[in-house]
Length: 128
Image 1 (cartoon, rainbow, N blue to C red):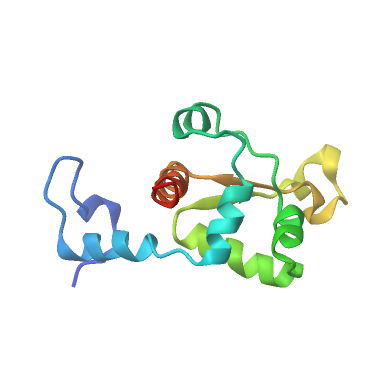
Image 2: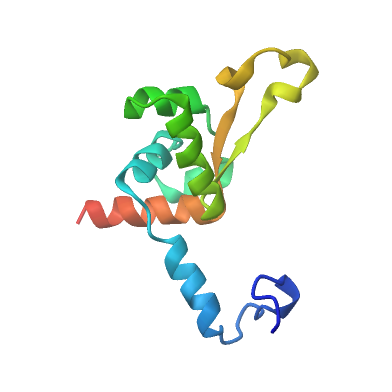
């Protein structure tokens, strides 16, 4: 059996996707209310185009913990879930020489292109 996650085996843009690829994409779009709140916290622009152009984020795990009223272990699980879904990634800045010893205070949570599109799809549906 071929590896379903082998990129070389996946269909290319414009080609028909296999059923397993469609299932993977549908599964990735299932976001919890808390994941949505965390993704909204990462936005710095009111529209998709500006967010995609710059995709600036000044939100970190500590900010998300405050937003949700959670501890850092809970936020870690939420961020791991968003990373697994391809929605966000955490810029771990603890290895930067000028930030050594800062812990998670200086980490930044960035939305991926997929994450930006997903959160603005949700925001647009909420506005209707």
